[in-house]
Image 1 (cartoon, rainbow, N blue to C red):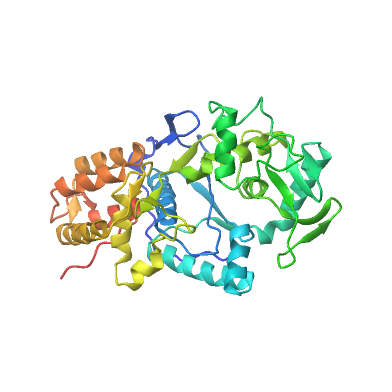
Image 2 (image 1 turned 30 degrees about the vertical axis):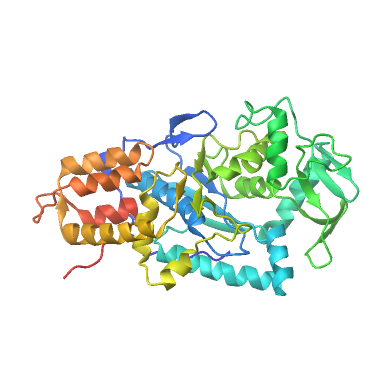
Length: 406
């Protein structure tokens, strides 16, 4: 799938090549060092389902991993960044029906907006930007493996993965089973379906409706379920175990926990060493969601004349693990901060001592709000004495392009 263009500055410093990035891991509930010696850092982030373009919740997630990659590159670590697109899913088909529009046309139009948004926000493009549709043969073969290895069972024309209650993912191992069932039902899983061995068993091959794409296979006619898609793509485009499996907190269960279990059952070993889950963004009192109609889209804000760098600053004013509420005041505050930083730092330099402090903050669980607070206290230098250009540093580490001030 076509990605987007980036004019962002790539920069690394030999001074920090022995430093490490530490991120909070949802599975171990502690901050872990990211990366393995001498190997590319493998990062897989779950992407959008393009029945709509990117809202601020999406942007907050992708900004987080953009900053992760910038930090790793700055300390001399190579990265392999995979981001998938779920271009076949129930919400997409539902929107096609309600709007009377061909589902593929919706995918094409929303993906174009998404690429434009990501480019405007100065997000680094993934090394592999991959859609489900273009990898369908691989995904179907994985489903066939679950059937041949007796890891799944059939109900009517559909197939379900056999969840192993004894070996649940460590992401949810401490959560009582009855609570998991309630959570699964709230998140759209068919926990009450008659014939299921376990209410938590996820569907891996589902029947297609007449207006949905379908594939005719020996085990039936239909289309793939969700979790099997991501583990198929992760195994193809990255080296396992991943150093980071990323996404919003809402993906901890069922998506990431069930993906981890399916990956192990198929014999692929550990899916990820670290799970980095990004906080939820709310608006008007509740988490942004299509069903509640409280989405704030990136392209709408840009259309209203808000600088993409202001939007980027607004996102960075919240710690990546924090849940937060979007308000217009946040945009106004970020406009003021962007103007302040541009006037203060444009064409200026930073001392080595202050750069060291800045790098230390970034590498300690990617504390962007603390970085912004620190920048307010930095005293810029007008003349370089083997010091570092702040323009270069802010774009390399934060993806922030300062406004040119006359």
